Length: 117
Image (tube, rainbow, N blue to C red; front, side, top):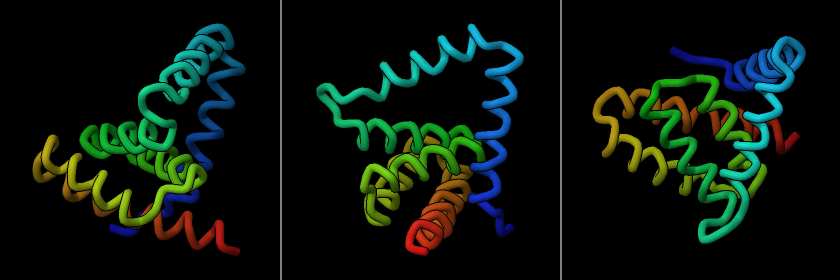
C-alpha cells in the first residue's frame, strides 16, 4: 500500500484552490480559522502542526497526513518528532492509527527526500 504523498499533497492544494473559487467566503473564513488555530501562543506552531497530524492519522485522512506532514517538515519537524506524534495517534486511535501512522512516516520520507533535492 504505497501512496504518493507528494501527489496527494498536490491534490489537496488543487482541491483547496477549487473550493476557494467556488466558495470564497467560506474558504476565507476557514483559512482565518486555520491561521488563528496554528498561530504561536502557549504552544508553538510546529507543535500545533504535529497535533493536527495526529488528528489526521486518527481520522484516517491521507490528505491531512500529506498536508500536515509537509507543513511540520517546513517548520523543522524531525522524523523522530513525527514518530512520537504517530505514537500518540496510535494511543488515541488504536490499530487503524498504526496503519495511518506508518503512512505518516512514509509521507515524511517522501517529502524530506523531495526537499533535499
